[in-house]
Image (cartoon, rainbow, N blue to C red; front, side, top):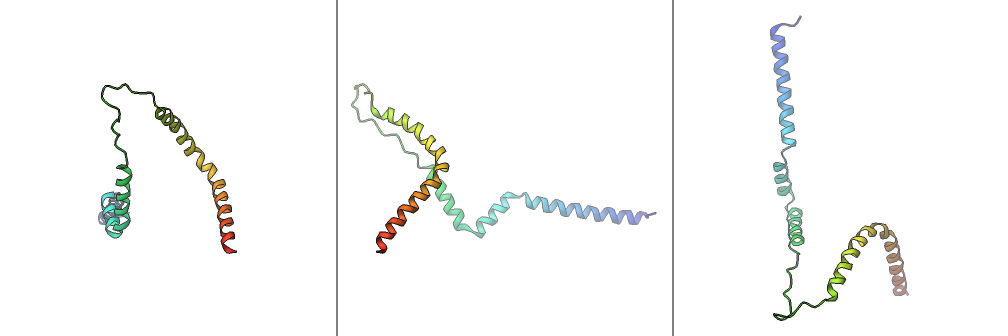
Length: 121
């Protein structure tokens, strides 16, 4: 039968194990420290990614001012119709592009091979 001292040593050992596991889990889940270490270790990719993200997010165009004179009624323009058609075609093209990509790559390869063959002569 274990003595009280043996039980206390076993409890102390298991407490140290749990504390070590807790410290490891806490270090693993500390995303702020991980991010700081990653940026410190490799600043160029992080800064260029931040600049690219800022460029993409700021790329929204400001609306143009109307060129019509005050008091003139708005004329029905073709721009509205073409924008609505473009609004339908762009998502459709975006959905179709992954399926069309292999065919487009093959076409571009054939075209480039033909151009390279002409220049090789």
